Length: 274
Image 1 (cartoon, one colour):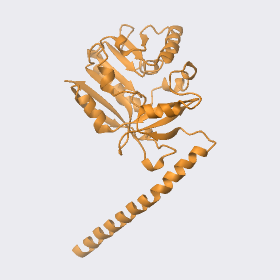
Image 2 (cartoon, one colour):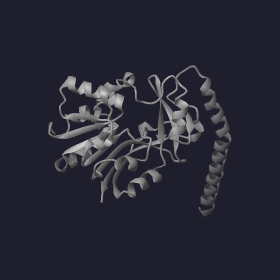
Image 3 (cartoon, rainbow, N blue to C red):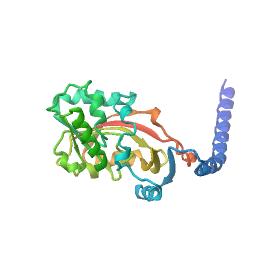
Image 4 (spheres, rainbow, N blue to C red):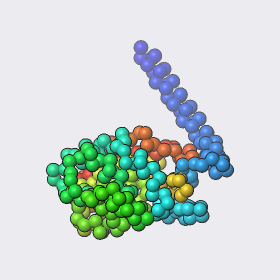
């Protein structure tokens, strides 16, 4: 029995080493195949791998359109974003628990109020509840016009986070991929640090941070895959404690031109101050 077990362990060890060796030998081939995708006439969702947001944006600037601050792309995917999607339910769970003690939320990167529209039927709040969307100027202009058209008086927009005022809940659902500064930098610009922070769809990368370019309609936008330990330490220094974390496997992505880097991960978090 012991000899059989020993043989089995040795065999597993040999096979494991062989698989790792094959993986290492195939990595240059995967890299070469990825680079060839630059020549493909078919559009790619993710292109390039850069060491910083600035480097990625500089590369995007050579393309016909760069960044997200364009009114003409504001409506891209709007209808779908106004729906409650599977990865939203953890956010709804925590927001519902917090509703008795909060009177508003700053929805950072909230586009044109998509989560307000999606969540309003499922959360108990009226127009006295402050739902403030913080986003880029072009997006907030279109969002404000749309909210006025639809009579959504409880929904307001700012393109400077300091104009949001003191609000107890900071929501970033899909914010972190596109944020060009550490989250602590943004939070410290607010009138006061929010007591609660809920983040969703945070893109992470096990092998260290990487920034790629995401193609959204006709524009290319820097998309950040962060190092989780660094991201968490940034919030810990402000006094935040992690209360919850949930994985989102369906939002794992591979950079088309750099498959050798491996897939990203996606996760959501709830943090409380103090």
